[in-house]
Amino acid sequence: MKLHGVVVRDRDTDVQLTSAGWLVVRVWEHEDAEAVADRIIALVSASPAKT
Picture 1 (cartoon, helix red, strand yellow):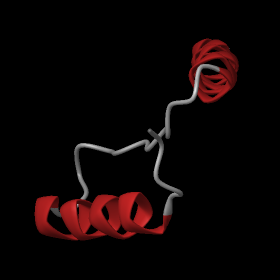
Picture 2 (cartoon, helix red, strand yellow):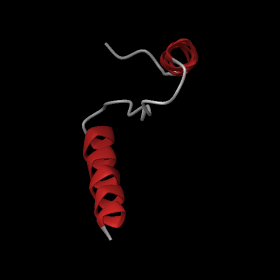
Picture 3 (cartoon, one colour):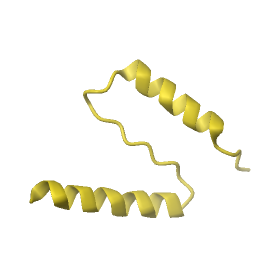
Picture 4 (cartoon, helix red, strand yellow):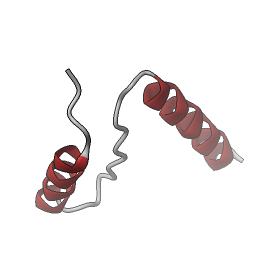
């Protein structure tokens, strides 16, 4: 039950941040930090530049 509430909250937060122009990246504590950094670099590099 608690997990469902967290998922709903996270999805709502994602929608709000995306609507405000943010790129949302969810990172879990068990993920390798270097792999996460590489993923973020790739996502930011692929995103259209905003001025």
